[in-house]
Amino acid sequence: MKNNRPYQKELPDKLYFKIGEVGEIAELPTYVLRFWETEFTKIKPKRTSSGQRLYSKNDIELILKIKHLLHDKKYTIQGTRQYLKSKKPEKETDSSPNILDDIRSELKSIRDLLT
Image (cartoon, rainbow, N blue to C red; front, side, top):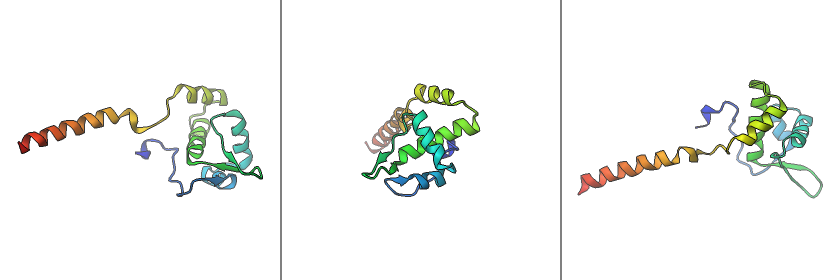
């Protein structure tokens, strides 16, 4: 399912990532990540008691999407902000009703075969 989004990567199985790790994953300098944090309020890493940023997988996916929009699609920062505001979160739920209808239909046909 992730193949239709070229900006997504397979992330290590961890809950939180330090800024250096995120920089390596996104192939971005850490100062860019800190700048984007000020420009895109949806990027909200947690902070340790010492102030160190801890990014979640959702944060990283958003960063990768922002990078894709800015670098590949050539959006401006303002354009990227507007795009992110206008889009619903990308979940697989958009196709869920169709999948559920297909499953329901298939189950009914199996039930009919059994009776």
